[in-house]
Amino acid sequence: MTFNPPSDVMIYDTTLRDGEQTPGVTITTDEKITIAEKLDKLGVDVIELGFPAASLGEQKTFKEASKLGLNAQISGLARALTKDIDKAIDADADYIHTFIGTSPLHRDYKLKMSKEEILDKAVTAVEYIKDHGIIAEFSCEDATRTELDYLLKVFGAVQDAKVDKINVPDTVGVTRPGKMNELITNLRQEINVPISVHCHNDFGLAVANTLAAIEAGAKQAQCTINGLGERAGNASLEEIVMSLHKFYDINTNINSKLLVNTSETVSRITGVKMPPNKAIVGENAFAHEAGIHVQGILANSETYEALNPEEVGHKRRIVLGKLTGANAVRAKLDEYNIKLNDEQFNTLFRKIKSLGDAGKTITDLDFRSIAEAIQGKP
Ligand code: KIV
Ligand code: ZN
Image (cartoon, helix red, strand yellow):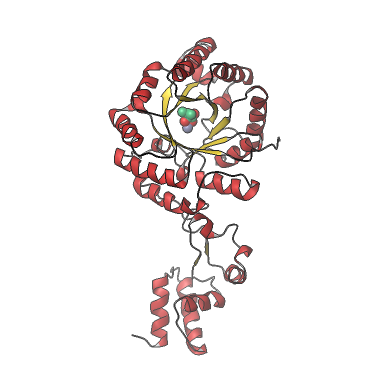
């Protein structure tokens, strides 16, 4: 495995394009604008706002976003077709991400085109974007299932056509970290423009594959908030960013303290709830129940936390249940400034255990009312 990561990585957010392809999700213009403003505050470098050729509504969204004066560049997706590119240009996109399938499956079954025809379309699309003075990023769709010599030929040709960035999609999430690292290492020998990756999560490896690509020198991660996207989704922005900061000391422009708030907004608008155990932003990401863990956390939070919850805008939570220890109960009593004598404390402790054994979850509200009742308050 090559280990030659850059010192800075650009974050290209595609929540509003690939994320909108999450089955059952559609995002209106107003909602896209709300999310785009959040993403801009979060510090993403590029916002892929949508696919201008898809509808009039998409074009309207681009026009509205161009008036906001965002710091992030606003990118529009376009097939490698001048009619799609024209729609993105007319919609005032700052940046066009154009793509064409290059794998045997895409060539033979979807596009029914020869290798030469596809190469020609790719080059024509990039030249057309550059002739309009717009930033061009080019993707070989299904890159990870494309023959390496052909992939190098297409990426080499778009590089000659003055593309600004190339993107390597693992369109159906079938690669693994070692293979992704090797692919980026091979591309880096011939390609001088920045390399981006776009990993799908069909085997749960999207973040690992993205990090492996960055270890090999990729300079941009395409990703989505909460890992939204087609099928099992894309690489999750929050997991990539925190891994880059924590494990590699790589800089991004992301203000990590806004991650939870951004995740909640996206979840509310899209209606896609996060599982409680979702890394970084899930409700339980910093929740502790087992007595041994709570004791450790109260002594030094690093015993059972990989990150400080404040770093990502989260809160630590101590959950009460049958695994709760006396220290956790004392900490909760202190939090609510409830004073109990030893006998009252033992009654409370037994009550929490018996509710836990009966399969009940004890919320903070339950805890306060039980403790205050034992204390003798109305
Ligand atoms: O997964 C994919 O290949 C894509 C392309 C449009 C980049 O989303
Ligand atoms: Zn995708």
